[in-house]
Amino acid sequence: MKKLTAAAVGAALFMCVSASAGAAGRMAAVTDKIADDSEIHILYNDSIVQYEDVKPVNTDGRVMIPFRAALENMGATVDYDDANRLVTAKKGDITISFTLMDDTIYIDKNGVSSTITMDVPMIIVEDRTLVPIRFMSNALDMQVGWDGETETVIIMDYDDYFVDLPDVMPNMTKLLQLKVPTYTKKETVFDASVSYDAALAKLNAGISGTASGSQGEGNADIKLSVNTGVVNIDGENVKAVYKDGIIYINNEAVSKLAAEKTGQPASEWCSIDINKFIDSMDVFGVDKAVFRQIMLGGTDAEDFKDAVMSNVSLDGDADIDTALKVAMQFDIYEEIDKFVSVTEGENGTYRAEIKMSNDDFINLISSMVGELTPEEVRELKDTMSLDVSSVSEFNADSIKTETYLKTSVNMDGAKTDITVNVTLTGSNENGASAQIPASSVDITNLLIG
Image 1 (tube, one colour):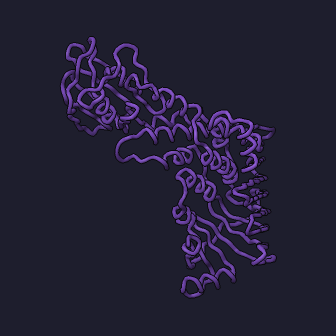
Image 2 (tube, helix red, strand yellow; image 1 turned 30 degrees about the vertical axis):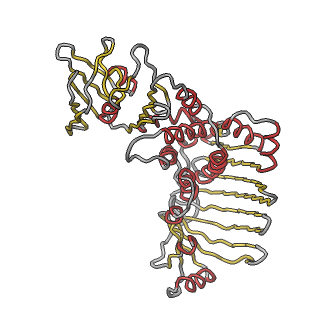
């Protein structure tokens, strides 16, 4: 169920990321405020920090802000010893301390001590002590940077940022937290069909069979049917085993082709490394993370965090483009969450649904890029359509998932239609643990090309 749920979310996410050129929600709020060039801005994650009395100032290339307001806005607890003019701030497992007008910051992180020496002195403005924000941020283990065009200090604290993720996508979070059957033993019956109709090629394929094994590993006996107009396979038997991101395939035609293409001796089994295949894909980072979720499963809140973080470099300074990109992805998750629902029935039965019609898709794009004109709506409908539905019903002993995806793209008169139907039915009965082949020929590079 998790793989199919991720597939439906991933398809919608891919469309939204690809089509979104504007801003909404968090992203819009940030871009609107940094457009004001009358003052220096402090961006903490996706919020512009407001200072009631003394505003940030730029001194010798360093942005200075009131120490208490700065540290508290970054989530630290601040204590000030007036007699010794000693400031102590604590956030998580980090404690920093410094004496006002001194240039040394003392840091304690999990009992490990270190220091930072500031290259500009603190200053007094209207009886407030201002400190260089870069050094305060770095001392608290945050990424900080400066955008000269908008005069904005960017502070990214990703650990703090993702605390809000369950509130951003409450329905998906509820879905991920459900106790899905683990299937120590299982037998899954599956029936899938794919239809691909483009200007230069057509494909109709059907796959059906049974798979068994413990969760995270499985074996399958499949009857494969493919008709591309060039290659025709009718009911050929394929044995497959999956474990730890590797798919092993036993099929005479595949083995013969592998030996011919790789120059290696023929082997009964061939293998495909899914992680290696995904890593080779030249795609936008978040999409690669979603592909990994779809193909390997195991989707949880950390996977969504990883999908966002795949676009982030933790080396060097923070930058405004990355901050806006992360804010946009949070906006996307929030919008997509509206199309997810989880309901609890009797006897511990759950029903999870993801539904997005083409009208929903148009409205989603409109919310991301700004209100569309009637002409733009017509143009978008003529260019692309999307219809996604995934319904899963499960309890501790069984699961049934039906997924439908249809997308149509019309570019420069060349139209491509893709339709996917998948039905899975599983239970805790029958099945045996997968037996991993002792040897195989790796054909991953043949797929990479």
